[in-house]
Every structure is written in structure tokens, then in C-alpha cells.
Picture 1: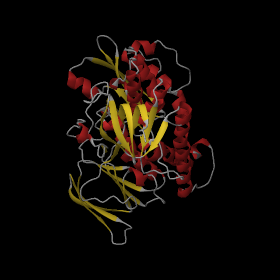
Picture 2: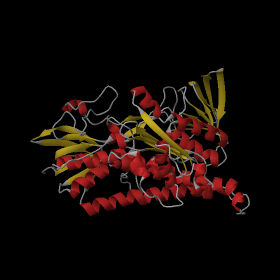
Picture 3: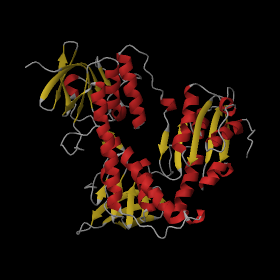
Picture 4: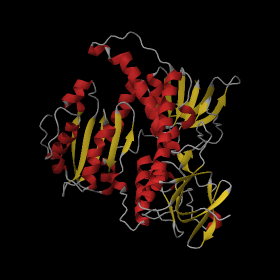
Length: 476
């Protein structure tokens, strides 16, 4: 039998992979996408959407929304004159709602594949060898040929030596999304995005949450003004974040109902008992099983597929995008790379600017930023001006009962070009997009200062921050 032949084969159906496949098909390529993830749908077929849609971005945001509404009903409604009594949480219903959303979106990708004539192949993709001007790739039990291959195999949770993750008592991101009841005492190892978001979910629902962080600073990647504000707000909310922690022995109880964590911090040896433990210490790229060595595909010493700025590997016609390559492990970054690669294959001017990739943490208040932090500009010796406006001065924020946080804008002292924008506050995840657009088009703070913003809106805080760069805010 002749092998199936495609112009483009994408290995992996996560955000980078499925978007690359759809864009390639739109550009006229005969395209297939191979997927073998373990999140089988009711028919036993692999789900598309990767970590993001199945056990990452989407389900976590569903839980964050539910827990946020629960907290508002518990603590904030009375201030607005709304009387609802004492609310209770039905965790199984919350989890079922999350699962329904995941089903809808992952099924939607299958619909998009059908609409765009992308062939879905069920099975793990691994290189076999060259085939003429293209490549042979084994997918499940069959071998297919493709002129060009895009590796989009994503990443998986990093586990710590000596700690067995069973996703029942000790969880990674997968188990953290399916906890069946509110744990009285929840421990988290790692204060990154997953740690803060999952800690926020269960803290709002009633857990006593302790976060054990190895670094001596909180949210080191964020602008330090934002990090300090976040640490203060989270502490007030009840998140107990311990820094400079060295985790030692982790011992599940014989009845598997509790787990004891021994650790050291600035005060010496410590011990804590938790009803659930979540390990969130980063992620590692999925390159095992690609058969990379057999075809000479270059893998870095950190396990990433080695690529250039255009996501080209060392092999002709082989590309790689998303978590499996350098750069931030963000779904939207993977999508942009997927589009870029498809367009480059078609001879177009594909584009992905890492300097304008936004970062978001969906806590309450939300945290979002794009571009350089103030500490980075100082370290690089870049002269800059800063404008900072608190949401306390914003009428819409006060009306929403969300006056916490601020918008901070950093601009070049010489050219006024926006170098970074940092937000902690309500809807920061949406507000940051204005900054992304401005920076992508090399906008200046003066450009945003001259744009009329609707009143009253949270976006006026971005406008005022732009004015504040020139020391002329109007409402603060």
C-alpha cells in the first residue's frame, strides 16, 4: 500500500500545533496533524488542544472564575447591599462545569480541522528518515510522508526527585484541576503561575494555603513594584508564601490522606502536614519519542529542539514551535510561532516578536505585563521615564469595588518609545493588549496619551499612566 502523503505534517495538536495546521491548510497546503495525548475523549480518540485546553489555561480559568464568584458572594456582596446568606460550594458541580467547557473547546478544534480540511492522525509522531525532498514519520502503526514537518509536542510538568506524583494526594497541574473536595490544608511547591492560580482557587474556597518557594524573591520575573504589591495583597488574602525554602523529605501518611513536607527556610528546619500537595516547579519540553537522534535533529542540552529566530531546525523542511523550543512557555506565543512558520513555508513574511509577547497571571487582582521591567532597564543602563497610576484614582475601578493595584508605563527617556507596561488590577489580562498593540507599532507614551479613552473605563488608567510618563496626569 502507498503511504499517505502530505505537504505539511504537524506533530502535536496543542495551541502551536493546531493553529499551525489550520494556517497551513488555509494557505493551500495538504495538511495533517498527529496527536496522541492521554486526554482521550468519550470515543477514545485523542483530544486536540494539548495541555492548554485540557489541563492548563482553559480549565484553570474556569475554576478561577467560579472561585472568584464564590468569594464575592461570601465577602463582597454585602457591601453592595446584596444579601444572599452564607454560600456553599458544590465542588463536583464546579469540576463538571470545567469539564464541559473543555469538551466544548476541544471538540471545536475538530470542527475547525474539518472546516479547513486538516487531516487528523491518531498516534505519536516520530521520525523515520528522509523521503525524497521530505520526511517519513511514523504515526501510530502507520508511516506517512510529508514535504515539511512542524514539531509541536509541547511540554510536561517537571517533577522533583523523591516526590511521587499520583495526582490524588500529591498533584501536578493535572491533578490540581480535579481535586474532588476542598482540602483543609493545601501545600504548593513553587510560586509560579500555576502555584499562584491554583493556590488562589482553593484559598477562596476555604483552604489554608501554604506556598513553598525556593527563590529568595517573589515573582522575580515581574516588575518589582508589581511583585511587592502582589505579595502584600496575597498575604492579606491569606496566601502564606514562604521564600528561600529548600524542600527535603516528602512523606505520604500510611492512610494516604495526608502528606508531611520537611523543609528548611531562613528560620531553620520546618515541617508541615497537608491534606493535598501540588508540585508546580516548571515544565520540561516533550522531545522523547521523536527519534531525533536517528535523523540528526538537534536537541539542546536542556532538552529543547534547537531552532533559529524563524523556528527552523537544523534539518531542511523541519520546524518546531511552542513549548518544545526556546522562549516563554505560553500558549499565545506558540500560536504566533505556528502562524509564522506556516506563512514562511508559503513564502510570506511570517512574524513573531518576543518583545511584545504579553504575560498574564489570573489571580485576583490579575497581573499582566509586556516588555522590559524597571530592573531590566536599570541593569541594561537604559535611560527611561516612568508613569504610574493607581486604580484607586479610577472611577470605574471604584464602582466595581476593585481599587487595588496600578498601571505602570516605562518609556525611553530620549525617544519616548514605550519599553514596558506593567499592570496589577482588575482585568489586567485585557488591558495589557492596548500596550501590546502600541509597542508592536513602536508607539510612544505620547501616542497613548493623545488617544481618547471612553469614560468611565479601566482603560483610562492606561491613558493616565501614559500622561504620567510626561508628569501630566489629569486625575491623579
